[in-house]
Length: 254
Image (cartoon, rainbow, N blue to C red; front, side, top):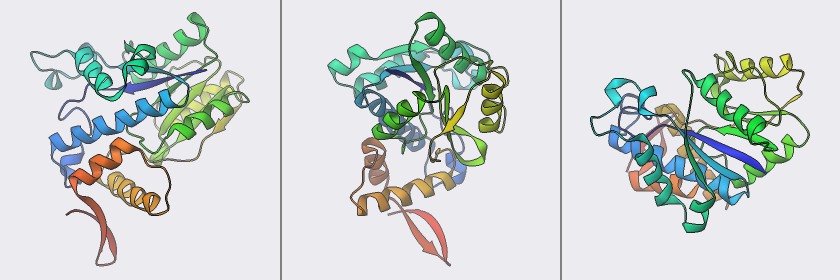
């Protein structure tokens, strides 16, 4: 069984999807609600695949001061989101734990290394909450690949990754340096590990990313294919669609 760690920030305006108000039709509160919907789909993809869900959140000590309100409680905010998404049985099996480390690489490395070396799990993965098209079937596919390769990566645009899975630890120093997919691969090869890759998928962090997501959700629905339920519902509630303006795809609100 793969432990799927969803690396989440507390869903606060300006902290999550900070580029959206300037690059998309969404306001900061709407962007936050979309982030929550995408995270919800990540949680469900993990638990419905038969994997073990670990919701790995950033603490207030690791968040810039301007995004830490006086009454902040990162754990409570994240647990509230988990409780709203999972049913009683799913919540019993899910874990909510704080990230430890001064950088992205350190936080992921500490989590993965602890799971593999201290808890003795077969495989551990870090999944980004802004990759809503990484569905249950894709979690299953990643787990199968991890039976054959010690490191499996899911590439996204600009050399980023939405998934990083391991059956054996690596040296995570600099592993998330840009471009992430190259840095993680280099660290895996340094450790003597084979590396395999999942199909490329979308990480939604800018208006351009959202435009691509909205178009693909529409296409998948038309073709009768699976879509991330919470994300698709929120996109509908926000009235988002892609139209042609002067021959260019444009994200608009109905």
